[in-house]
Image 1 (cartoon, rainbow, N blue to C red):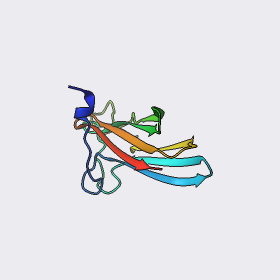
Image 2 (image 1 turned 30 degrees about the vertical axis):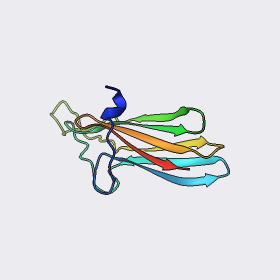
Image 3 (image 1 turned 90 degrees about the horizontal axis):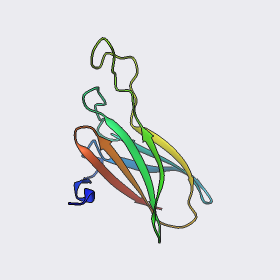
Length: 123
């Protein structure tokens, strides 16, 4: 079975794992894109349950191109125990890119418990 059969989608307003893609600014071909998880329903981001990464892709006429990846590595781990650490990362990433033709942005997030989630935005 292809891995694509395991990628989940949903409405981000009802599901906390779906990556939300927002174009923050566009000047000519230059874009600033924010991808976040938990925009409407907060994801817990604890030592036991967290978003590990977000990938952003662009699909144009020809092929899919990987724009970038953001990894979230701090989830409250500590020598004192789970969720006792001082540092936590929120699953929010900003990508600056130049896209010269219309296409679709695809974001994929990975939850350590609930797997892969995807969303898309036509640009």
